[in-house]
Amino acid sequence: MKGLYTFISFLFFCNSVFAQGSILPMGSPDYQIVERLKIKYESFSEIHTTLKPYNRIDVCNGAIALLNSDNEFTERDKQDLQYLIDNNQLWLTADQNIGQKQTEKKIFIDSTHTFYKLETTNEFVKPTYTTNEKPLFGVFYKTPANLLEVKEKYFRLAINPLLNLQIGKSKEEDGLMFANQRGIELYGDVDNKVYFYSNLVESQQRFPNFISKYAQFINAVPGNGNLRYYQSSVFGKVSGFDYMNAQGYIGFNVSKHVGIQLGHGRNFLGDGYRSLLLSDFSHNYFYLKLNTKVWKFHYQNIFAELTDLSSHSIFPGDQLLGKKYGAFHMLSYNINKKLNIGLFESVIFNRSKQFEFQYLNPLIFYRTVELFVGSPDNAMIGFNSRYDLNSKFSFYGQFLLDEFIFKNIKSQNGSWTNKYGAQIGVKYVNAFGINQLDMQLEYNFVRPFTYMHFDSSSNYVHYNQPLAHPLGANFKEMIGIIQYRPSKNWNFELRCFNIVKGFDDGSSNWGGNIIKDYNSRSLELGNEIGQGVKSKIFLLNFDVSYRLYHQFYIDFNTKYRIEKSDNPANNLNTTFFSGGIRLNIAKQKIDI
Image 1 (cartoon, rainbow, N blue to C red):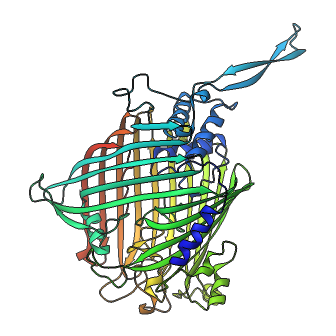
Image 2: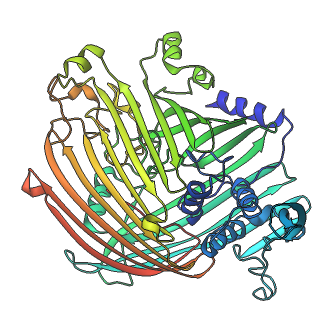
Image 3: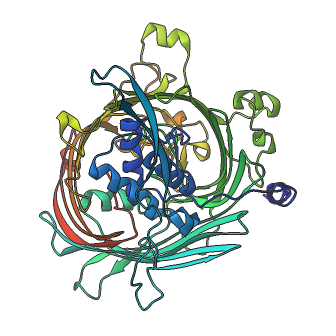
């Protein structure tokens, strides 16, 4: 990696840069608000919603531009727009407190209303820059979003506490379930040229049975890294997991249209609830990200250092873990305000000591690079699309192609080489004319052995967790989501999953566990989704949140899950209830 660090340093310090803001953490309510407003008003056209996380400045500027447009807004939409501004206004100043727009009005000059003249008037719009009249102790929460905020001419900084305290009960298990997460986040910029973000979260948690079972299988809490078993001193002899996670990055702009980011974090590519290309389900990873925005294009390159645990069934903290690398390209094209298409390619590869520098070329197909280096790495291509219709609907989809042989596709013989997956979905805002009632329906499938490679260290996995869909491969699922926000403080969300997945039994390999290599496959031909030990899973999540303050919530959650397997020993039922408080931290959504 020494050569890679030298290359990064050259990019950072040999170019003049321009100001850019911090990115918006995944799971923030801003994402749902941006999504529904984009569908309703064809707004945020500068934001390519396929590429997440978003930039805070883009979100704030988009909200201000929409608020100052000629659109007619409901009171709830005005509140949502103001929320976006309040949550991302670190780069605003008080002189942006009042906006002004011009309107033209017809003034009729005859009694028949035939002849008229146009009269131009200036209209002042609602204040956008919000401050608290009485900050806490005169120092804290001067603005709604940030505990501590520093705004100097050449320096901006926001600091916030992170807190998630939940307690619950599972019908199938003794003792209490709990979540105790505490942390801190900070973000800002220096000289309008260098922007940064960092957070640290320490957690002790006991999960419902199906999540604990999965965590023990992968030796990690989903979305996190190494774990330790934890004995609670508060809830008696109740055990759980103790884990820590951190995210951080620093960013620069090398020109008005090209930006660079270096750090640890996750990314999400797509418009659905799931992604078949790259999702935020796995643990944070070290990455170098290039963003190029020109005209209607947003081209993103991600070069990542990943963790290979394929040879580690257990791993003590003082053991050096294996490394592998990933390179991902996504070209997003906003054809117009309604239609977006995207092209994707990726490669996962294992080198014992360094990154394969030929994969740093951002303008070449990775299969071509493989011809240059003679390297049989794990390359894939994909396609993403989205179309917004009638200010009510958004249709979206993805197609992922890992590998295929045309004659086997044509003969429909179920060859293991036919490795691909697809997604199709629709979103419906203000459903049935009910304001703030949003619905989503999504279908995903991935054939057996997709994402797998003959070398297990090159599989599409990081820290034993899938880089794309949480279920890996050999599955199909239907997802239904209903979200209703009757007021700016109340939020109700129902998520329903109907899943069919094939699991392995003993030493068999039916193509669902993408940690394995595909050389140990159980079948050459006749492979189909759900093969092996088939499980049918029904999962229902119901979340209720009440916002006490800007990012301070009271939560209630219930989960109902039934898993029926061809192997009765794998049957698992879950009925779970919990409640608690949450501050500046996203809800945990482990829907598997």
